[in-house]
Image 1 (cartoon, helix red, strand yellow):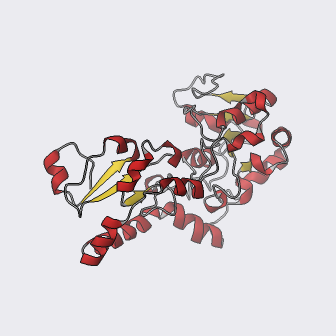
Image 2 (cartoon, rainbow, N blue to C red; image 1 turned 180 degrees about the vertical axis):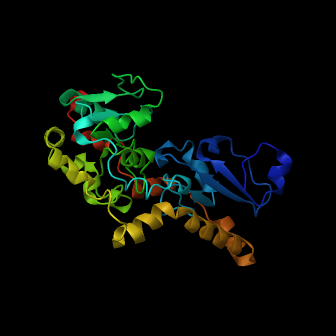
Image 3 (cartoon, rainbow, N blue to C red; image 1 turned 120 degrees about the horizontal axis):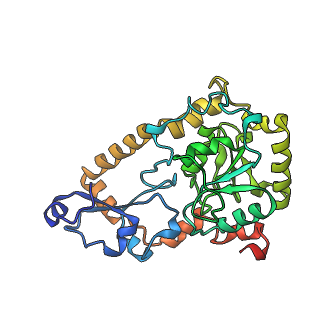
Length: 307
C-alpha cells in the first residue's frame, strides 16, 4: 500500500495510502475495487479539500475511531520502563525559571499561542521554539535541556479525541511535568498518563491565573512538586498501568497488526470487498465536529488582549 507517482505501480496496487496533505492531487481509482486510505498525524482541521474525503474508504490517524488507529507514542520508543525511573535531576538542581516551552508550529486551531503568551506574561517561561521565542539554550539538543525545568508546556495545537502528541511523552521521559489543556474530556490524558497527578491540566482550574498561582507554589515547594512524580520508581503492578497504559501505548503495534489482518481478510471476500469500496468519509465535517472542540475554543481561557 503506497502513494506513488509511478502510474504502473499505482494501477497494480490493491490499496493506495495517501497523506492527507496530498488529497488535492489525489488521482482517480485505477479500478472500482481499488481501496483508498488517507493517513495523517495532524488534527483533522488541517485536511485540505475535505470534500475529497468522499473518495476515501479507510482512515489511519491517531483517533480511536479510525479504521487503523495509531499512536504518536510509537512502539519503537516505548517508554514504559524509561519514564518510571526515579528523577535524574533533583528538585534543588532545577532551573529557577519553572516552565519551558518548545513549540515550533505557530498555527493553532485551539489558540495555543494565546495560552502560552498569557503564561509568559504572568510567570517566567523559557520558550525555545520558534513560537514566542525568548530564550536560546547553549546545548545542541534543546529537548534534553528541558529536563532542567520543573514544568513543560505540552499544550496541543488542537483539542481532539486521542490527539496527544510526542510533547506529552517527551515531558514524562525527561522528568518534567507536562502542562496541558483538555475540554469536555478531549483529549483523554488519563488514558495514556501513569496517573492523574503526573500532568497539570490548565483548564481544570477556575482560571488561568489560578493555574499560574499553582505552578508558582509548586515551584517553591519540593513536597508539593514531587506529588506529580509519585509514580516514578514504582513497579507496574496496578491495573491501569498494566492493562491500559501498556496496552494502548507500548503494544500498539500488535493491535495495528490485528486490524490490518482483519481488513485484508475482508477484502479477500467478495462481500467484504464490496463493503470496503463503498465505505466513504463523505461527511468528514461531522467526524471533525464529533471528535474535536470548536476551533478557537481555548480562547475562552485567555483574556482577549492575548489573542
